[in-house]
Length: 257
Image (tube, rainbow, N blue to C red; front, side):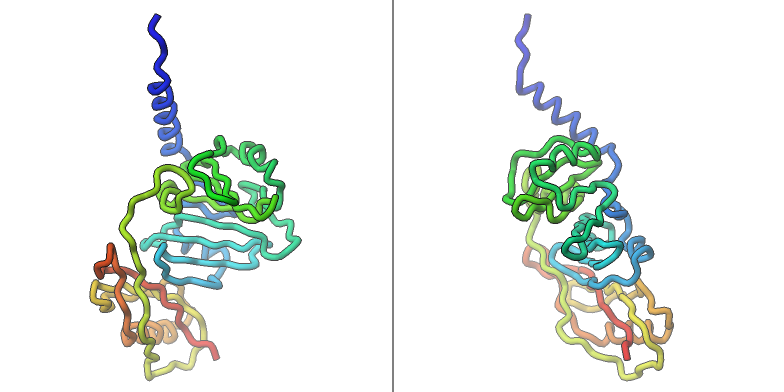
C-alpha cells in the first residue's frame, strides 16, 4: 500500500480551510460587520467622536455607546475592514454579543472563542499580547493586558496579513495619507449651527476634484459652508510607494457657536 504523503495532506487541509473562510459570513463585532459601510454605523450610533484620514485608511471612533468603545478602519470607499471593541470605562461589564470575551482570563480565551464559532488558535506568526483565531471569513483577535483580554478586534483577511496577525505578511508599497496643509475658513459664515463630515477627493497634486457631504448637519447652509472651506483650503496629496497619488480626506466641518 502506498504511504500517505504528509505534505499533500497538509496542503489539502489548508485548501479546505481557505475555501471555508472565503464562503463564510463576514465577521461581526458589537453590531458592526466587516464589509459593511461605516455610514450604517453612523446611522446607529450617531456622529462619530473621531473621523480622520490615516496612513492605514479612514479611522472612526465611537466612545461610550452601550458601555463599549468602538474603533473602525475603512478603505477609501468607506467599507469596514477592522472593528476594535473595548470597555468604555473601568469595571464595565458590557460585552459584544458575538464574542463576550472582554475581561476573561487568557487561559480561557481559546475555549470561549471556540464556543462562538472561531477556529483553532493560530500559533504562527505570533505577536506578544495577541491571540488570533479564524472567525467567519476573517479573523478574531484578542489583545491582552496581563492575564486578561482587554480588547477584541475582527478583521478581514487582507488587514490581518497587513498587520502581521496571521498568514504571510502582505507586501504592499508604503502609503501615506493626504493631509490638510492650510485650512481656510470661507468668508460667508451662515447663521445656522451643526456638525458635518465631508469626503474630499484629491488628485496627485493635492487639488480638490470633488467634495461631498457624508454626514450632514441638517442645515443646508452649514453644509455648503463646509464644502466652501474645503475648496479654499490647501492639501498635500497622498503618496503610493513614495510617489504622489490621488486619495481622499475626511474633513470635519460645520459651525459650533
